[in-house]
Image 1 (cartoon, rainbow, N blue to C red):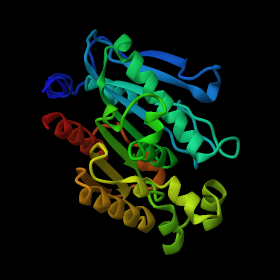
Image 2 (image 1 turned 180 degrees about the vertical axis):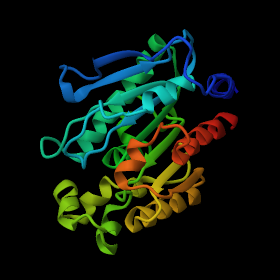
Image 3 (image 1 turned 135 degrees about the vertical axis):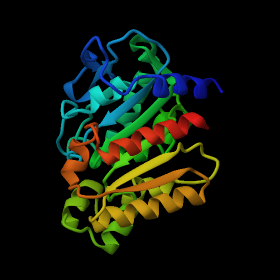
Image 4 (image 1 turned 90 degrees about the horizontal axis):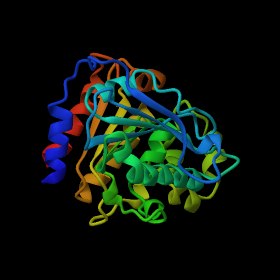
Length: 285
């Protein structure tokens, strides 16, 4: 009930229009792990107006597990802070310097940091949502299904209230490679996830879905006419639903893999509306 009332106040009562007193308050390049390194830092965007108990959105950038930056956020920070949320953009390390599991561990460390420091920015540590685009969507989904990553940081899956992965086809990597990888060469995925099916499965979010684990609700967004992400999104959602986890798939019409991520947060963007409806829905439960 306390979470419901917090989200109700922060997401519904907060105006959708830009805050009257300006841009979000920004703190950049905060280290979430020691020793401090650029790839293990995050940026925090807080609403301009003073407040407390706000939901916190943790955003993981895309880039094929090899590149990308927390600076590539477009309209997202303003869109979320105008809704009364704290927005946190996270960097992580890349392959081949680290493994996918180590990258996911970085995301878990960032969630732990947010849990510990949310109150400093007006956020509620009990109302954290994890989202990401492309490879960031895979990392977000994995940290929210395989509880070992958060457990290593002293948290449970229950520390996350909802997950929004945006257009990725790597929920079940062995199945993706068996079915066909669409426009992405299979060798690209094998270079990231390895050649062995067991290793691929270990870092596949779908492999870790099970009843009673505390996996949070999911909103899964994908480009409407991209066959690989469509098939993987629906199969993943079906597995979540079968395990008793609320899951919804939204197909984004007229989008590309790039634009579904870059447009998120823009006014009148349908996937953006779906995200805020998802937040409202979690709030009501």
